Image 1 (cartoon, rainbow, N blue to C red):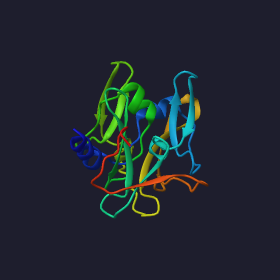
Image 2: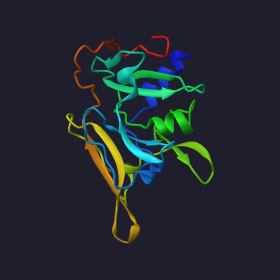
Image 3: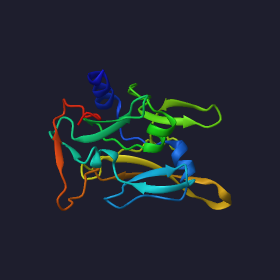
Image 4: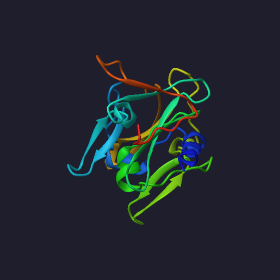
Length: 194
């Protein structure tokens, strides 16, 4: 089971951004290295910037090493338990979508790597990255210092949305004093048993 999840995390995970989250958090962005993930706090009904959930997993931070899978990924199983892994593809997601709305779901299809939520249908589905077709333009990140393609929306005139595609730095935990760090080889999947 863990090997299957690792394969899903390493093969299907690409830099990703939920349209549902982008609409909920329109006009907001997260640019602080310690809290780079846009998320939605459903209890408070507001957007917030969060740390990567694998940076403090059972009291230890997780870091991916090796050039074949340097990007830290996460998913939640059907019971809501966090699973961290390493991927060859850049990864950006939301705990709100992955844990609260779509636990147990993952996107393995190469052309549809983004886990998203359809509010009108009340269901989870996999979609193409929104930045791969913005008014006919395919956005990509070619600078290795900024490998993660992130989609968000700004407010435009008349209350419309303005799509924003941007390349952001690899999500790496900032150094903290006295922090424990677990180095994860690419073939390792770390779950709640850590």
